[in-house]
Length: 280
Image (cartoon, rainbow, N blue to C red; front, side, top):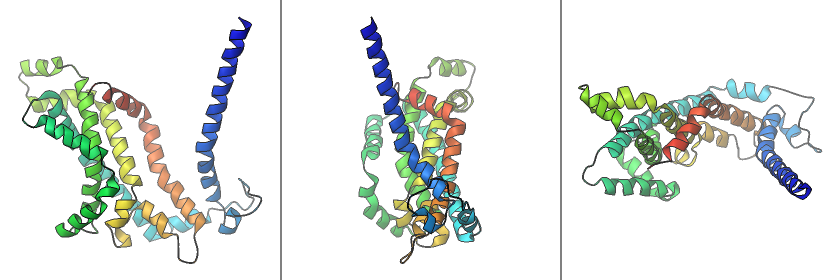
């Protein structure tokens, strides 16, 4: 009996040690980023390093927020991320409802294509996609970024919404049909309101992907007035010097929207992710 209790306590101790080490591994870089954003460039590389320095300063944040070019990066990121989120959520709702409730020709083929798109690494499509964007005449535009991000968010969003709609009983559809309502009424007045966790999960995932994306935003834009926050951070790395404190301050400010969004909707996000993966 005593031996079994010792084993249980030993396992719990190992678990807590592993959790603490994992939390330190994940959290310390974030803490250091926030701390260093309030230092000068020289103090960031001071030895021995100090988490909290006496010369606490908001100079880096004032430099970022006082620069119209930096603020433009935020505007572009918000605009692109919001447009991609709205378009992806609406399209995935319509497509997910169709795949969940109807049988039609080439349904299995379309499902395979959607899964195939999800499994393709985006970087492999960089060169052909760049050529397509230039050929369409939308290079260095919001349209190019929105369409590009939708290519990579729609497949996952459709899979998620199809799985979520599959968890809802078809009796709801039949009840609406008996009352004289059509598919439009069934979807938007009945299924969408009770599918809020799944919709929020798709929306948060899409916004996070569009907000953080770097490679295509760098490739498909040419001028600074079209570039997003990740590119703005990259541009602070000059040829002869790096503005480390401003880079870290911009990183902190760039992380806040996603962090706030997740904290506000984490309950719906977790519920939607789990429900959408139960039945496909």
